[in-house]
Image (tube, rainbow, N blue to C red; front, side, top):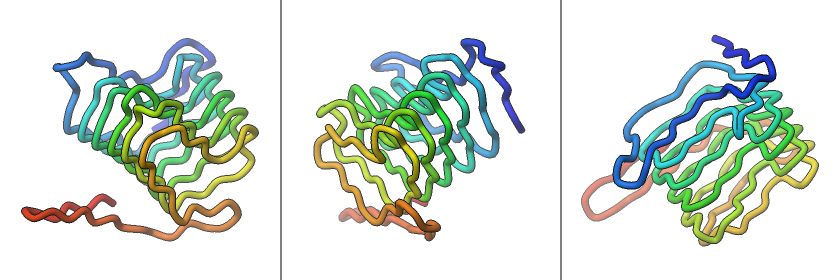
Length: 171
């Protein structure tokens, strides 16, 4: 499925408010392109979600923006050829995982973590190339960046988060 925005100020917005967060949802299996919105896909006050097998391309500003959200995962997302940053984390985008993604050809950063209030994010096993400002800008706190590949094919990674009560698998 291709969502064609034709250069208009359209995009996908999941925007709520503090105390009324959107929770427990999944975006999967589509392409959004040519958005002139603030971001092709914009998350604000969204928790516990997964974006999987999605492409965000040729947007006139950011590809994906995540803010005021926690415990989210971007898996096998392709964000490319966006005029701004491909993926921007800002304003308390916390405890997120960006894994097995292709992040290429932006005029900004591949991933731009703009605020020190973005805590405990994981960036692992991603492919980066041709992001004008650089692949990753990390102004966040306790960001874990590991095994990202600037010029090779990704491998599948699994992250296990263990506690005294349960083990959750983020894929």
